Every structure is written in C-alpha cells, then in structure tokens.
Image (cartoon, rainbow, N blue to C red):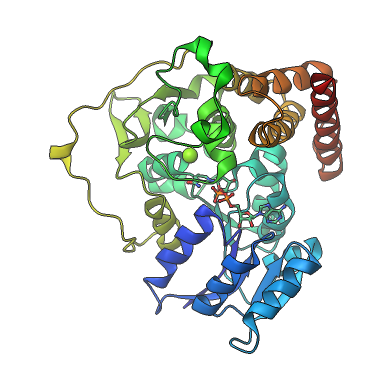
Amino acid sequence: MRRITVLGATGSIGQNTLDVVARHPEDFQVFALTAHSQANAMAELCLQHRPKFAVMGSQSAASELKNRLGKQVSTQVLYGPQALADISLADESDVVMAAIVGAAGLAPTLAAIDAGKDVLLANKEALVMSGQLFIDHAQRSGARILPVDSEHNAIFQCLPQAAQQQVGTMSLAEHGIDYLLLTGSGGPFRDLPINQLAEQTPSAACKHPNWSMGQKISVDSATMLNKGLEYIEARWLFNCSREQLKVVIHPQSVIHSMVQYTDGSVLAQMGEPDMRTPIAHSLGYPERLKSGVAGLDFTQISQLTFKQPEPKRYPCLQLAIEACWEGQWATTALNAANEIAVSAFLHKQVGFTDIAKVCDSVLQSLPATKADSLQTLMTVDKQARLTANKWLQEYAQ
Ligand code: NAD
Ligand code: MG
C-alpha cells in the first residue's frame, strides 16, 4: 500500500490522478489533498477519498471546507503555504503528485523533493523556474522524479532502463541517443490565418483540439509557450544539449513524443490523448496499472502528419528556446512574465498576441544575472512580474 499526497487535487491533473487511484484501492491510500480556493470541489474529493489532511490556500477557504465536511469525515483541514510545505514532506506519505499550476507549486514540490519522495511531476513551471537547483536537490535527497507531462512521460518510456534511473543526470549519447523529438498539436490556432490571431478570445484559446486541460496550460498550448516550457523541462529531465532537442508539430496527438537512436531507430510512445495514461504510468512505475483509457483504434486513425512550427505563428516558442540556452535567469523570468500575461489575457485585459509581447519585453528589460539559489531565483521571478505588470499598466493607458 503506497500513501499518496495530491498537490492541486481539484485541478485537471489532480482529478485525473484520483480517478486512477480510485481504480486501485488495494495499492493506494490517499494521505493528503490540497487545493487553492475551490472548497466545493475539495469537499467532494474528501468525502470520496477520505484523506487524513486537506490543505486550502486561505483561512476562508479552509473554513468553508470544514463547514461543508461537518462530521462526515475525520479529515483535518489546514491552510496556507507553510501547511502546504509541511504536508508535502510529511513522513506518512511515499508519493507526491505535484499538480499545482504555476510558480505556486515550486515550494511544496521542492519540499517533497527534499524529503526524498517519489515526486510525480506535472507542475512543469516548478522545474522551469529552478532548473539545476531542482535537479541538485533531487540528487542530494535521492528523491525519484517521474515525469507526468505526456511528452516527457513518453520520452521516459522510450529510454533504456539504465537512463530511466538517471533522470536529470543521464548522458543521452552514452545511451546511443542522437536526439529527442517533442511533439505538440499546435493548439487551436494552428491553421488560423496569422492576421486573425490578435482578435482571438480566451474561450477560443481554451478550446484545445485534442486535450482537456486547465485554463492556463490551454492558453499556453495556443501560444505554444507550453511546448517552450516543455522544451526547458526536457532539457533538465533528460540533460540535453541544444542539438539533442527538437520540436515538431503533430496535429493528431497520437504520438506523444519520440527518441531518435543513433542506429536510425525511432522509438515513439502512442496512445489516446488522455492524461490518465502518463499518470498511471508514473503511479505504477515500473509496473503497469489500469488507467481507464481505451486502447488505440488504429483503423480510426487515417493519417499521422508532422510539420515544423512556424516562428511567426508561435513567437513564444522561439522565446522559450532562446531563454533555455541563455541561462536560468531567462527561463525564470519568462515563466513569471507568461503567468502575468496569461492571467491578463484570461481577464480580457490584453489580446492574444500581447502575451508574446509581454514575455519578450520582460526578457529584453531584465539584466542577465546569476540565478542559482532559491533566493536569487525568487528575486528574478519577482522582478519579472513587476516588469510585466508595468507593461500592462502602460498598455492600459
Ligand atoms: P488546473 O488549473 O486545472 O488545476 C490547478 C490546481 O492547482 C488546482 O487544484 C488549484 O486549486 C491549485 N492551485 C492553483 N493556484 C494555486 C496556488 N496559488 N496555491 C496552491 N494551489 C494552487 O491545472 P492543470 O491543468 O491540472 O495543470 C496542473 C499542472 O500540470 C500545470 O503545471 C500544468 O502545466 C501541468 N500539466 C497539465 C496537463 C493537463 O492535461 N491538464 C498536462 C501536462 C502538464
Ligand atoms: Mg505536455
């Protein structure tokens, strides 16, 4: 019996994780669930999964949850960042699903890493904003990082077993690998005339053609900054050089990513676009668990196509690739600027194409600095947010 904590339990990944967990009551026990503000959704999850602890973002959300639960379960309700970190490192759990969205996930995910847990990593922003520091912490504590992001999970599955034991430190060349191919659908605006991008609304951006996901990652998929963040995530998980990492558009989302070996072989992982597959893989690793996802029906797949991402359509992807090789400060700044820009777009304060402008402007304005400690990373994150907000204020005038 493994004891699991789900950070971000009310989100898309959190709910899918609990769906898989519920299929295996003999294998998993839910130790703790966390959510930011959705007390209603959290109450339902607590009634179903009966965790020992539930952590909310604020005192008011915690009171609301307590009221809703009453005496129906013995779950203890806590709140705030310290409780979130304490729960992530508690001895009573073995596995932590890191599925908070954005930079808010860094502190609790690092706490789980430092405590040497099995960390199932969905929260790509945490790795993007801390890079080497994140990998170093895992090395020090012996925590095992298992990638949940479908592309990284696909690549992980296509790696030799020896490389799977060396997340963050492997040498791809020593394992006979030439390069990794990250696939991406291209998002909902893949075929739209480029001159219509500026007028696209949040609801149009959130209508992903193949995947159902939270709002922030849906917008990131439309700009392809999601692929950019994934590029940076892959660079750290698989210790790649620039030559060892490529991005290709694959509209059908059947192949979730690929590994090109030196002898000409390409290994691909395929499946329905349903996050329960990579979640079940990371929960069961090295064994396979039932996930509730149906097998692929190849007779229904008429074609698999591929193309290069167009730089003019996806300037955010280009920014992310450049930031990746510029240095840690740049990826931390880009992640922060994007969070501010996407939130402004979702609140209809800026247009779709302004997201790239905010990110670019922040990267241009911030000085290149050494960002290799938690403190310096947080300073860059803060500066980037201030600069992005200043851009938005000037835009509004
Ligand atoms: P979501 O918006 O559906 O859920 C986010 C969760 O985080 C919620 O439980 C919310 O309560 C919690 N949360 C939000 N802000 C918080 C804060 N400040 N403090 C504490 N908790 C907070 O997001 P999602 O789509 O489930 O994505 C979660 C993470 O997984 C993201 O990093 C995303 O990039 C990654 N991911 C998602 C998918 C997907 O299919 N949804 C696929 C791959 C990777
Ligand atoms: Mg992904």
